[in-house]
Image 1 (cartoon, rainbow, N blue to C red):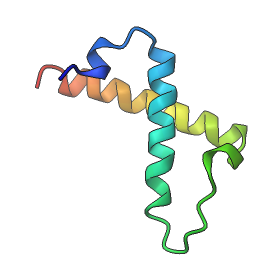
Image 2 (image 1 turned 90 degrees about the vertical axis):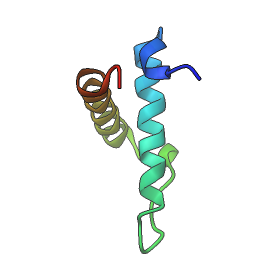
Image 3 (image 1 turned 45 degrees about the vertical axis):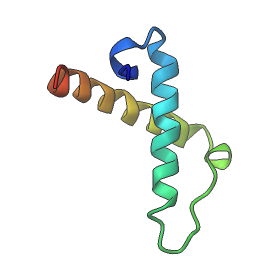
Length: 67
């Protein structure tokens, strides 16, 4: 299996996909089941999740590359 993080040619697309996946993980942790679909989150939350995804990608590449 190929590592998508190691072989990604389009980093922005990878970050966007990671941000979407991170958003979706939060819906399963909402005890009141009130988590909104990502499409309704608005530009602020899209930007925040992309920043979080980019930071996470940096940590993975820096600290876990080659493991």
